[in-house]
Length: 201
Length: 201
DNA sequence: CTGGTAAGTCACTCAATAGTGACTTACATT
DNA sequence: AATGTAAGTCACTATTGAGTGACTTACCAG
View 1 (cartoon, chains in turn orange, blue, cyan, purple):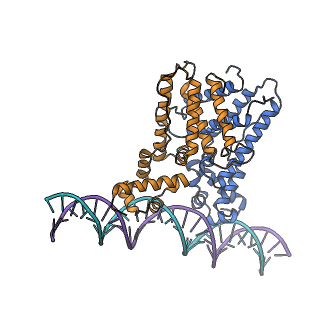
View 2: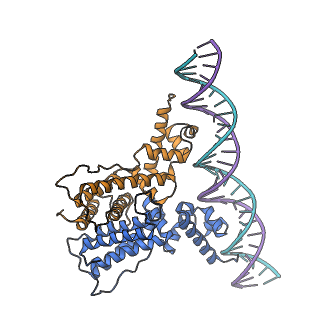
View 3: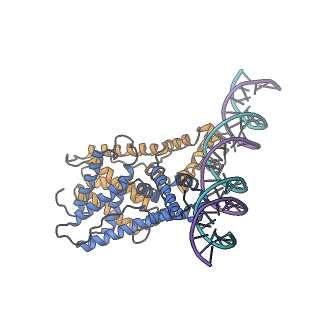
């Protein structure tokens, strides 16, 4: 192990990320992270200050919340319903495929510590960006409460991704299986289209 | 403290319930529960067998997942959309007002232990009951994937209730406030009506 | 009144947690 | 070559977690 602060901090963050993705945020304790990184735990305190600050650094420097391609320019073909559906499906799929983001999302729903707040902030910023982009691209009818609709439907997307990571309890959709997942996606797409004006899907 | 097994076990379950409602499932450790119940921890092992079995007993004997009034008889006035909306809103409200159920729901989304499975089972059973009741009461058009729709929209309801228990990160809806909560409820109700055929709400 | 059973108490073990103080060693600058 | 600084190592504390063995005491049946 060379004496290289930059590579050491990177390895610490990598280790924390891996542990969280595999076993959840609670599993990323100082001792566990230090051991996984192959580094003395004193260095975690020196470089980050403690567990809280380690997690904060992780939330800020790594993509703990998935980044989405927000449609930017105006596009004559695009409909509000189509854009919303595309964004929500992209969100659901990103969470489904990114264990770190999934664990972070679950943590954000369950806990109230600083890490949860950090994730909430990233999430809220993204929602704001999406809402702004949609309003820039489309004329949103004034009777549509776009913020509330986005909050509710994004919740559905997030929830589906989280639920899909857990074994189902029988009789329900098994969102780990691809066919059931597609049924859920379809339901979500149809929902958006029914709500926001529907080209046939 | 009288020598009374029944009342002791009840106090243990009460204590576990209170701790979970206040600080989450992880806070309901053997030591913490025993202390909160005013009981020696040996009794937890004697009467339940260990932490895992304690939680299982709790899941089975207390209402860890909120019970809903599922509409039973056929009612000429009832519409599918109306029934679904009513059920989803009842679910969201029940979770919003029941901290134990909220913590359980969050746990079920985040963890994979036996307690999580127990909650999933209760949840899945409820969903099955609801779907069955709806099919008994209404003719569901064959092109509607009712199971998928219920899964996605119940997810939205659950997610909203969980999100509403956490402080918001700015710029978003604050679902702890009643007016924002009502906006979300409205969005959900309109969504259901748009999807399933809409009497004006 | 006696004895067995179950309720409750006490005092531990073992492992893992966060966090700290004191030390050694590499390395770049002077 | 001397030296200060920062990287890395070692050994420790204090707390908390789950779980167990051995004890005392209340109470009910005979």
